[in-house]
Length: 399
Image (cartoon, rainbow, N blue to C red; front, top):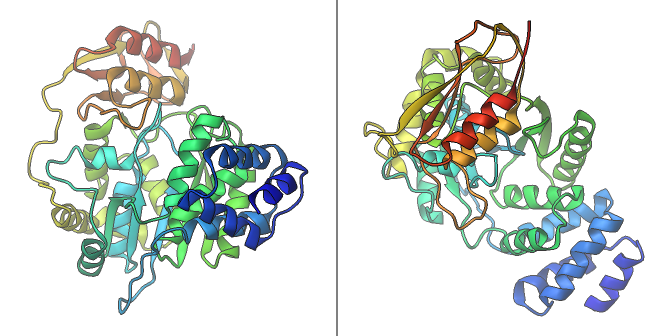
């Protein structure tokens, strides 16, 4: 049967839901070999998938393991997914704020890779914070607090883990159907009613142009709705970092400031836009969501009163060599600089330094005098010179 499925996709034919389910089942149980799975990914990459095929692939991947159920618990159950960015700590603010507004937020998040940060890495800079909760703990936390942010369990969408690793090996990552199925299969397994997608575009994003991000957002929304989840997308600019910090503990501090009504305006605005509730801005400004964040952290084993991990780093300012107005603060370059300092990883099995990163003092449209700090490098002795040069190269000033 797998041979017929491979031949059909190789010739550009659409697969039906039964064929896709059999292929995914075979990948999980091992009856489809790695070579055959790699061939299927390559044929999908080259020939694409229509919406119906992508819905079938997404549901087959979601059904490859357990699906969370929130029996006897009132909803609505909602979540958000970002396609990845630099300084993107929205989840840390959004989950408790959305819960404060009356929704339940079962958020399964991931780790950073390359120049983009990961939500779990940020939260793990809080001493004791656990991202490996079992299903019973997730149920209890969602019922008691209204939100959690944890990692993917071994039982949730195992087909996605297998295929994601193989996509990296076969250079088939940039495929809209495969990206869509990967994102949405994990979200379907969360047992949610509604999903909002933060689809980023620009230098620091996976999708470099607004047009490419729009195509991905359209497919994500159509497939999400086809799978029975109310899905909407917001396209956001990632040509410069979000907020003023890049790095794990630094971003936790900024998220906490935002939850207290004191954070940067762009972070607060994006968070409220994604939630889409007219009450969000006033509730965020009140600081009420911070108390819920503290309850979530405590429920996941974290000590919100303790000093964040990675403390004791040194700081070096990157100074403007001339006066002017900032016309570019390139997100990719600044993200790469944080990576060089040790805030990111190139492989999933690598550790990150929780304390290092970059504080961004000047963003697009802001005036700079000669000698003013453009950014501060928070470092632990690793990659300082290369990070400094990357930050310098990331800034463009007009006189």
